[in-house]
Image 1: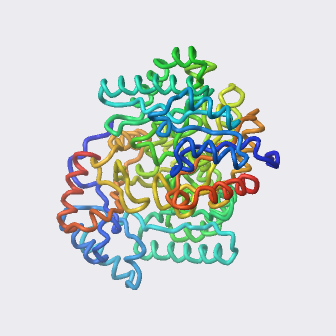
Image 2: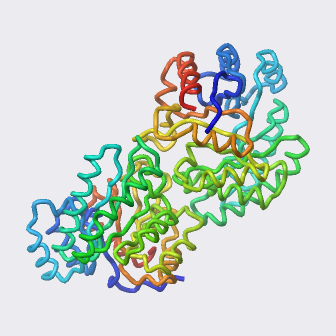
Image 3: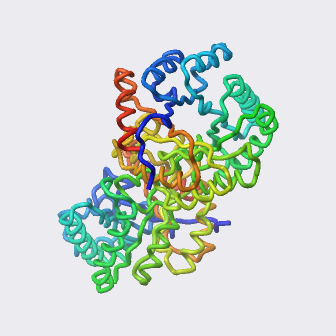
Length: 276
Length: 276
């Protein structure tokens, strides 16, 4: 059983959840709504002075939970793999400059090669950026993605696989981000969350819901309570495994992006207290 | 390594693959194209005299590989679960009357209850129809579906789960249908195919491909070679595990359904020899 959520002290919202807002609007409005945590997507960091971003987070008393996202390591082309390394090194710098403790990795896949090959390249990529992550004090969270993204977004599609990779790399700077959207269907999920916690690898927890029916492969995620995921059950498993971090609301939704975003933020808060 | 496919002696096509055709057109055109196996979907059996269908299959020298599909057992409503049982009993009768050795089960899921509960109801449903299946000599093949269908189509989303259920039921009349579309992403697939074969549970093998990108949750399957699935590798695992049945082409595709279906059948044959 998960602990009851009575306030917003562990609520984090991703900037992409309120995509119509720029970074300044996210920070101001999250803070005004009494939200304590923010995960910043790199699209809203583009062109920003990162020291000023850091100051603004301080001014508005928002804790930065992570930067999203690095990854996309695999490619049949060597120069693309190198470009991914360079981009990840920059992402680590960005995370460092805004003082984010974690960089989330969407690991990537190239449909022109096998998933095994893509996984090798993911591991190689993580190992290449790991020294810089250590220097910067930025942890890397492997996020397993739903199997429907195995073609081109991630060759890591279960918590079992993410655990295995994190354990192979065996660094306190490499762990896992658990997202209910990607993993809710897996009957080994509780076991793998337990394993992840035992190894000290539970770095992040993302929540949303699975709409039935789902109409878009990317931008039709539900708000907690909209769909069929038992979020409190999975949150309970996270807590049982020792996780005490933020519950991060990460929702890509054309429907919710079309709403007034302040009204939406209140809906998120309500769904957080009642269905998370 | 899979054996080389040099002819069409193990090629089976599903009637839904050529959806624009009625059953008579499927039988005539498959046979004329030198295809030996057919899996009949129940939509084209509606309103047919099943003895006449059986005779027509004989006349055109087509082997019926299976009838698709039964299942959809779970529901929060008892009367719906009973209706599913009744429908499955009728499906077994249909399979018997056209002399199909196998009925494929798409097991179902109800988003209003947990996957565990849905799985219990699936098992209960299979146990209820099993005596009739035995009497009819019709085997039941549990088809694990891709996790993207866990919300409302199937609470069985990996070969591991299907194996477990078949082993629990432990009847020579209950086994598994392996479909590359649903299972290709699973890094435990080879191990689970081996296990399935060892238990005598490999009842069917369905092939198609995963398009990148995929634009529709149901009707955007690819023809072998179109996408990123290594079909020959998986077919090799099936053969290694003792499977010697038909390779069944099951493709739902708005794109291919819009083509001249005879031309499409030739494309299927080409893809069969070169990418299966």
